[in-house]
Image 1 (cartoon, rainbow, N blue to C red):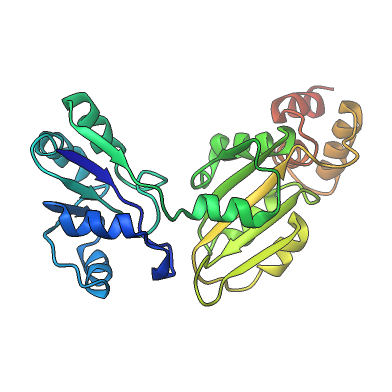
Image 2 (cartoon, rainbow, N blue to C red; image 1 turned 90 degrees about the horizontal axis):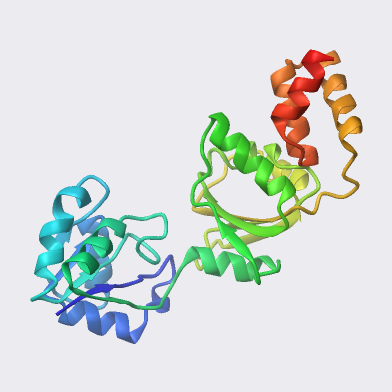
Length: 266
């Protein structure tokens, strides 16, 4: 039998596919993040089926058992919205199913990632999906530095509460598209430079957000010595050498550590 990975709408219920509806009707069991939310979706389409809560807190425990069941039953895996495994639970189950010899079939369908990427108007020949950005620390700094220097289109999810802060940490003149409430009644796609987008979303923001950034396109990138002088100016304005180096690295694409070493050791 088969483990089906089934995308569900990210907002507009009309985006579900006929194949997804048939799979959900015929499955022996539907695995979902929130049985109440999936239950409402099934009720809308008049589907009656058994549900089992499968989410980040249960997947490690349930994955081996469910992988074995998928060898003799049809299981359908869904998440609250969009395509499972894309910043959502499911990887452990799919991996366990493959290793157990179960058939795994992924259905195409709704995804906030691809919807935002296409709506952004940015190049799609090469893109990088970053999930949710790290909240702090070196991992966050390295992500911002990568966006500054790498010529590619970057896509990531962000909390509405942290959106303005994240936009303000990007190089001010990179192009961004902030996609909010995709496919829903109050859908918004705001295309601008990062600094303007940070201003636009400085107030209270509601809904789910996807950010698309064109990285490695900061205009008039200074030479390294000019970048060091810029960092020194930030220090003279009262910023610590560490923060000045990090800010300059984001703005120029040079490595934070190299800038820091120059401003504290020379």
